[in-house]
Image 1 (tube, rainbow, N blue to C red):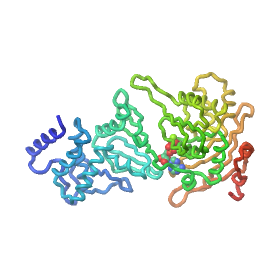
Image 2: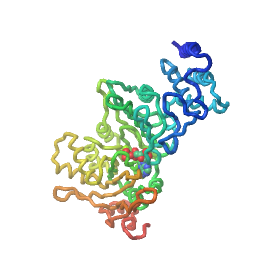
Image 3: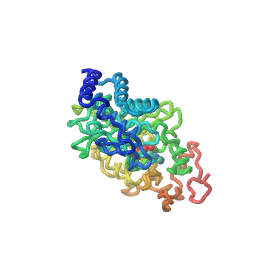
Image 4: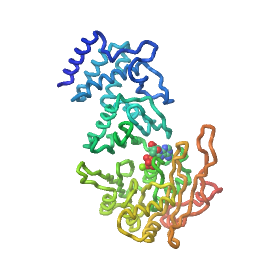
Length: 470
Ligand SMILES: Nc1ncnc2c1ncn2[C@@H]1O[C@H](COP(=O)(O)OP(=O)(O)O)[C@@H](O)[C@H]1O
Ligand SMILES: [Mg+2]
């Protein structure tokens, strides 16, 4: 049945039931709270988050949206049908709106219908970096590092499911009882994870990490206090001098962002191969080959892992290999590559300290299943990794490089490291932000001569705690 036909029938049914305006589109009584079944829903975000003001426009929009969803999503609505449908739904409601307001209403409804429903506006909001939907009635965002609850609501579980379907279907993925978890990427590069009941107990749950349209550059990280100027200058020299660097940190600590900045230090004219689960890195160099893994298909076949891609990349004449994150056996291939002429490689790993990072690397190498003795693994790690950049998300939401550590080599059975820079917390300011300073430890890295030999300028002032910084 065509959409318009359904609409006609619906109209006929409603006009029988109640002549005049469509039942579900009544405006709320003037000045009072709306009499709809949802408590004061508002698809717009108030800065405070928790208790959104009741704006009749917003309430009406939600009603109209509900109406629209009921009609349009019941079956086979194509995008081209939506325009007249939205127009009709708005006109029939006979709301006391000015022409401007009516146009805006239609525009917003269309955007929601064509886009990703109630969270469409959040996806377009450049201040929002992450969106978390915990079932239909709870939507959180991260704005400038802070988690906030929004007044955005979905109609019900099925509405969230439709939005999830809309996100994953174009990629040939589906979400249902048989595959209740999916990862997907939106056309703009944003990463989506969805998990549905019964695994997610309180309703379909959606986590979106938005793609930074304008990714942080090194100047931004310095301005944000993520690292100091001397630290940035030092890391630039390390990348130029082909040091192998691992950025270590927890989830959301800013590893990928820092990796992107480190990659920007790779000199032009090098052939860079990037390997990621979902392409996030945005390199500005001209000669970049971007590789992305592939999950298995519905029959569990055809997966291409980070490890497969790392191995393949070695046959692609890379000057530099950048791996988004090492999590398993690929660590072995990556370390071997670093040790056999592909130095200057960069990656990230999930760990809470540089020492923890070394331990994790050991475990990852064991996951490769090669049955290597522990000492051999440590030697491999110690000779491959030159620098660990430890990143953290502090209690106030800021991301900091909290340590830059040099890996010196083996002594006896253990890997020896020394800290070059650290972040020292001094307390909190009036707004609850963590205060502190980045400072060098006074140790000059052992590989400085290797940098100088390559003609890379190194300032001793970078490493002096009280010395002039430049
Ligand atoms: N140095 C930083 N300062 C402020 N926000 C940051 C910084 N680095 C990353 N972010 C933000 O934090 C979120 C997570 O960053 P990301 O680099 O993806 O972390 P990770 O790779 O460790 O999970 C993103 O929304 C990003 O915009
Ligand atoms: Mg990451």
